[in-house]
Image (cartoon, rainbow over all chains, first blue to last red):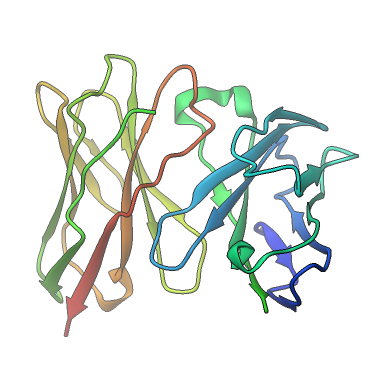
Length: 117
Length: 111
């Protein structure tokens, strides 16, 4: 079946601009996660949703970052006033349910590579 | 978050077994040990997980030390497609949705 998809695959923007990154989770998965991966590092947790609500947004670095999931399926990560330090690969993952606990598998998309010039 | 320690890189020959170690000396009794891997230009993918007993699946085996302070991911016959960064992750009962990946082990497989 279809996996997690992310669009665009690449995004180049200028410092100070606004960007939106989209994630389509696996159908039927109620939990959705965003991670950020800088070059040479492992992914870092940003936020996760259970259904439509953000259950944990403790990884968002500052108030320029915001994510929504209005209908409990597709999610959008929004970054305002982008900075060069925001350049990274943004990964999305989904799982059957966040309450699945410590054995629940996360399925990752291919990521969006964001470059801020 | 409970932390893990892995070697930065390892090398293996194709068709030979590979043992990827992970230390997690601060693991608690209810933490699950998960392994994910990330192939070049892809998102991470699940490999295997375990709690106390050794585990096998079609991709790999997971050997867990008796005191659970370390574990080893075993690829029985490495292929070129196994070249990836391998992450050992602990999932506790309170923050199991927040994966802490660390830097992982970059596995290079030589033909």
